[in-house]
Image 1 (tube, rainbow, N blue to C red):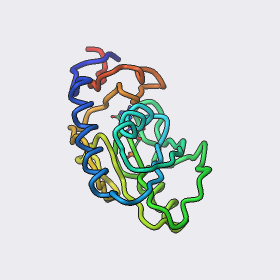
Image 2 (cartoon, rainbow, N blue to C red; image 1 turned 90 degrees about the vertical axis):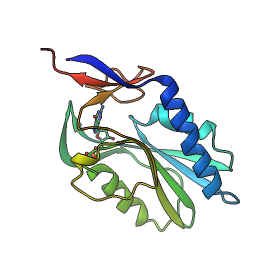
Image 3 (cartoon, rainbow, N blue to C red; image 1 turned 90 degrees about the horizontal axis):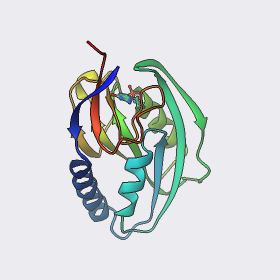
Image 4 (cartoon, helix red, strand yellow; image 1 turned 45 degrees about the vertical axis):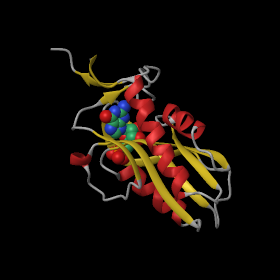
Amino acid sequence: MVVGKVLFSPEDIQNKVMELADEINRDYRGSELVAIGILKGAFMFFSDLVKHIKIPLTIDFIIASSYIKTDTTGEVKIYYDLREDITNRDVLLIEDIVDTGITLNFLRERLLSRAPRSLKICALLDKKDRRVVDVPIDYKGFEIPNEYVVGYGLDFDDQYRNLPYIAIFKKKV
Ligand code: 5GP
């Protein structure tokens, strides 16, 4: 497997992050936010995004996974759960990529059962063609084709997360 075509440069990503932060700042003006990052994949996106959010916020994380190498197992496992009480609070769930939608849908329902005042979703990448479960994405970065991507937090077998760009990951020919 090799890192192939670069889809988004560091500059493309930063521009998009700032656009998304502007929308979030506008929509949540006057409120306080609990920003929840879904690890490990969202760690870079999460930290870049919150740097540009100007409203008071607290942060928390969930570690969840349904993937082995490049395939979804369809079953979401939680390895670390929230420490914040989100009851009656405005929550923004921050994800790296939505593929089948199974992970986000599972986490969304799990968080909704804790009665937040509001729950919105921000995802950097959307692989729309692969969707199995319909899940609302309130703040969306880029739509991408049905290709496996790595970089900017996204891994293959836990590697490549440190790449500053997002690229297609290909089987060697
Ligand atoms: P879903 O549950 O929507 O099928 O998958 C969401 C999770 O699968 C993401 O958080 C991410 O961890 C992983 N995933 C889905 N597509 C890709 C991809 O193209 N590249 C990488 N590195 N991970 C992916």
